[in-house]
Image 1 (tube, one colour):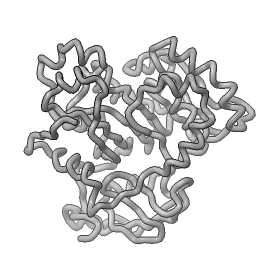
Image 2 (image 1 turned 30 degrees about the vertical axis):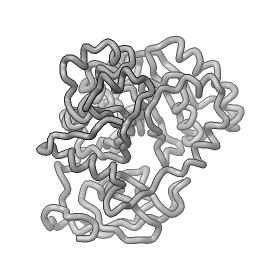
Image 3 (image 1 turned 90 degrees about the vertical axis):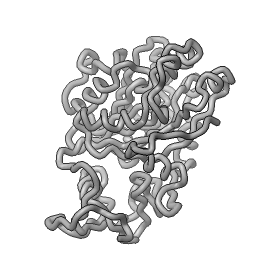
Image 4 (image 1 turned 45 degrees about the vertical axis):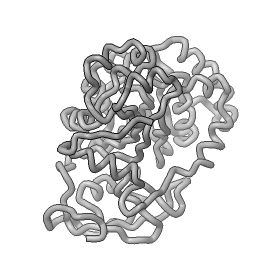
Length: 333
């Protein structure tokens, strides 16, 4: 494992450090593994064996939603989302590799039978994730966009984020698991042949990505989980030296009213325990963990997020947000 190192002046130093320590006051609430384990057992070996992601950006509360998976590969996450959206939902997988798409398409009939869907609710399309309109994907087509280590291997990440913002419906969410570095990669690592072979040479510094998201029109990006990345290839570990790599899961919302930073409007939320698979506890992000029936103070942006259609039925919001009380100091302030 590489040594952690951040520029202490970077605002995301404290965020990532807090996530790695388990969140605020040690609060944890992981996605229940049984939910995905059962679904994974229904997928063909060919789909599972070629999975190259670094996390599990499978959204909750997507029944009936339209979902887009960027860089879907052989379709693992597409099929998982298809089970959760149900027959009335739809999941599109986009990838630039014909061979991967061939594997994904070959599994559709088998997977739909195992899910009990009368008709396929998935489709796979060839195309580049930084040119969605060229693939026939247009403005505000999707409720949710996901990616699993797709951004890590493209050059123009800002263009991808702008494309995501364009195809998301208002109130929609980009849920992504990606590899990030703890500093900007020096030129010798960008040109390192070992890292190029491993697809790590284009990895972005986390702080730069978070600021890039805001430049794309996505305010207040949220870190959900993070863990140090370890590599089986000793040559990769040697080449990286002191540079740390992390698998980070993030939520980014297309909500125009979100502010920069956390502001206090005297609001709170109570989780009803009704999100499927999360009967007792739901983790929106590393700082906002909700327990069924427990009132929790929230900042103004979190209140707006929980008011979005996918979440509003599962929370009771307290306070109208009409009076600003200054910066938000945390749920216990």
